[in-house]
Image (tube, rainbow, N blue to C red; front, top):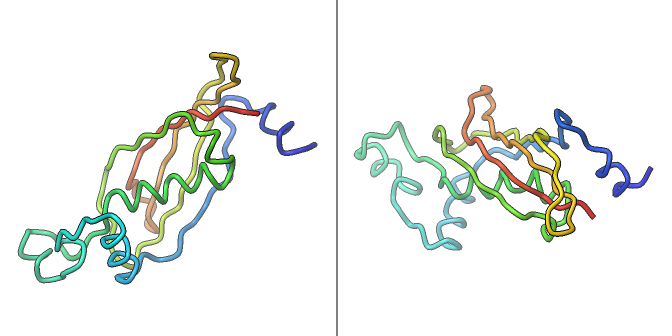
Length: 140
């Protein structure tokens, strides 16, 4: 069975392939700050983060969302993504790894496309939910 044929047989409750990230690094946060323009010191400076009431540096929320997007684009081409959203649930810290997963929640047809709806989730190495997300992808 080809990948395209396998995608067309998806049913509600099926899981998509899971991804586990490498540990988040300070260098990664600095590079993301440079790329995104988000130089908020809570993402880069331990003392500033603590003076703001945080336990330490936290990762950018949008870096976490970008990681969650990898579970989609590691599974289907980016051009197949029709909708992608996330709700930030908890903070992520340097050294954390994320397990990114998704479950099929529905199938529909719209404007000539076969669509699959997904619930997405990012959990840290302790099993704590960091992000809850949703997506709609078009199957080819």
